[in-house]
Image 1 (cartoon, rainbow, N blue to C red):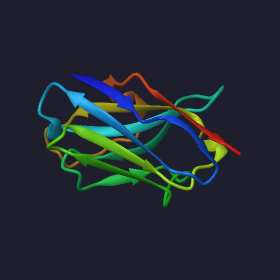
Image 2 (image 1 turned 90 degrees about the horizontal axis):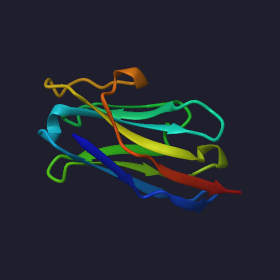
Image 3 (image 1 turned 45 degrees about the vertical axis):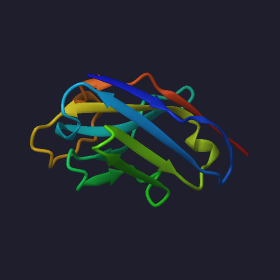
Image 4 (image 1 turned 90 degrees about the vertical axis):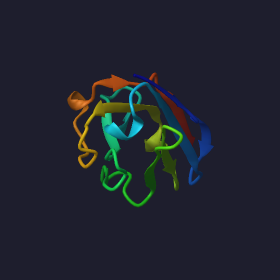
Length: 126
């Protein structure tokens, strides 16, 4: 399995970006997916997760009501729509996957994920 994230860039305070992560390998719907980020000088932190079926989503408090995670199983892609961006959202964003045949669970712990993408940088200027 390989993950490739893209869509990062420079955006102004209050702006929007959409990140995407393509997943190659096994059947896409058998993977629970997540987005994490590493702000400058900090540890990698959880942002959002989605179950294999797409029926469950979860968000960190810091991004709730501003970010939306979605997946397109036909395109083997997971998205992170980011709105009302703040300087504190500046980070390298990573997508991650773990095999979950049930399709009904989601995961928020970094250690649970098996495969990681290379990261894409998001910079929010004030």
